[in-house]
Image 1 (cartoon, rainbow, N blue to C red):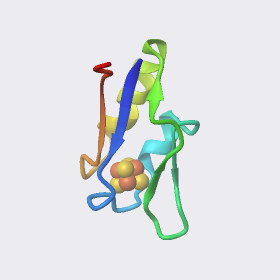
Image 2: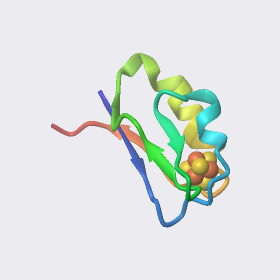
Image 3: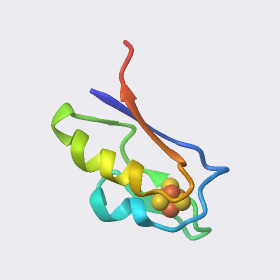
Length: 67
Ligand code: SF4
């Protein structure tokens, strides 16, 4: 499992992250990212990584679960 993280203060609502993983990310009415799932399977790594990389302000993280 991989943990999904978001820095809500950094997010500027570009919504790029939704393109590759609409089941993991959404944007609320105020234009701030919503993390729909805070963990994803290893098999989802590539597309969630694409979302993380697509964020223009580097607000998203994806990392190995530690427990
Ligand atoms: S791409 Fe980045 S700035 Fe845009 S909504 Fe997603 S987290 Fe926020």
